[in-house]
Image 1 (cartoon, helix red, strand yellow):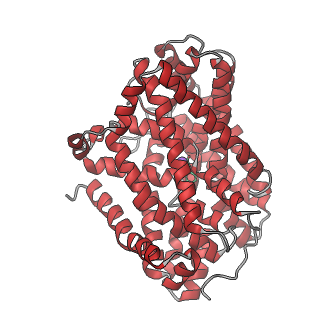
Image 2 (image 1 turned 120 degrees about the vertical axis):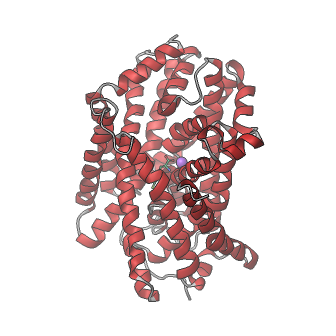
Image 3 (image 1 turned 90 degrees about the vertical axis):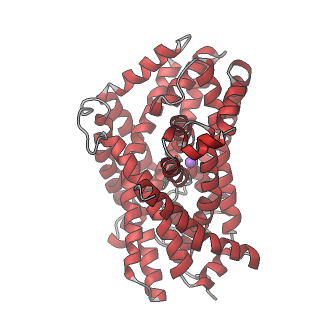
Length: 461
Ligand code: PFF
Ligand code: NA
């Protein structure tokens, strides 16, 4: 019997749907609505979308199954799960470093994630106060740039957001969250659909469809706006891991609270499917407005804030819908951020014997302090750069281009080659051909794809 009989000291999800909701809450966030459209815009549209979808399907879903099965089998924070499994199966202790790298990546991601979530919070009163009513694209762009120029305000909203995350994680991710997600995710989904509907009527919808879904093959091979196919793939692989909350142990730790009876493959497909749908719908909400009001698709990190506010400024009851939208976006960011805190928090509870409250406070404070540097890099520290990047860009680069893909690679190698095969078989409960297909992907395709992307980015080819 290779299925683990362990239980988690942190408790278990109330039901299979509680896990799916929490994991979808983790996956769906700023990555879908803020980052996906702007990275698509910077990389030239459909070429990026195709590569991204291939990575989600061929790399993301198999790795997600691997992370959940590791978590459920070990039933502890990622660091301790790996250390237990290494002891149990007599493998190299060095694999524990995978857990540590995830915790480090989590701190870095949380620090800038909270700053961007702060923008979303700041947009709630701005939209409600009618700042965007009848504002043209230029004015809306100025308002966004103006926000980034006010360090105190950015730090304030960043602090509010981090306090909200602390409030949930200190009580345990289960209480309250399940109910909130059940109601808010469908609401966000409906609002995005409404925006797509608005774009169909008032925006350049056909142009947006072509831009997102009809890549030019020549452009694809040349890497679109990303400059080369290698750069395009590195961007797509980082975004795929980030959007699915993979490569740093967040889904692994949620998996450690999953009932042994729940189907890991089915759950993974549902979570990844919901995440992908929301990202594509966000693209369909944003780009019709981009093209209709004459914005540039490659206007960077402000794209969604600028574009959607311009849209809200024009549509009937726009202040109301806009306010609702930024409230829901902030909620989506919240349910993601708490999952980023969970691996480190669970570890501190397990190894230090700390209360959840104390552990969560330490994690939140550390990420908060680092986040201040990101917030200031947008204004007073904007002259300061390392390797040609401001602090926030550097943090993004370290995680997206290096740590998350590397984390995914190590998960694949560990699950595919090191962990006894019967463990994966028992946890996944797949039919023989399906299991073989998964094993082939996780052993060969995933590592090969990630290594090729790395080598390509280093200019080896
Ligand atoms: N998946 C989240 C999003 O798309 O916004 C971000 C995220 C959550 C990344 C949890 C990493 C993580 F561990
Ligand atoms: Na996501």
